[in-house]
Image 1: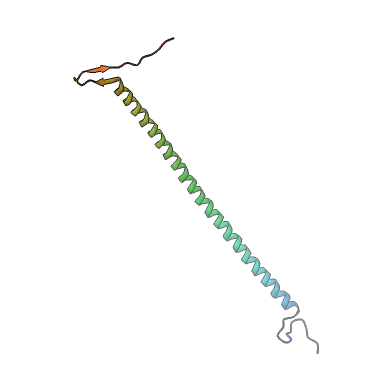
Image 2 (image 1 turned 120 degrees about the horizontal axis):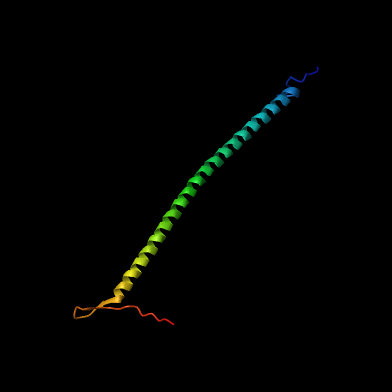
Length: 107
């Protein structure tokens, strides 16, 4: 008795049927990898957007830092001016003040 390619013998799949199932399995596996690639692309796009958001945070922080540094410099300059003007006008114990002018040496 001869068996054709589509018959089963002892629970085994033979011939074209086996080949068809192997092809379907390969196609299904390809779909899984396509889905994984799509997911990876989506994650990458999402992370790129988050990176752009953090870059904006960094730019804002740099701007705030620059403003703070300028304020420190301005306050330092004002304090220095006040200190110089205070040292140029000194009060005596009798209530009179003497204006001290800076001495310049011209050569």
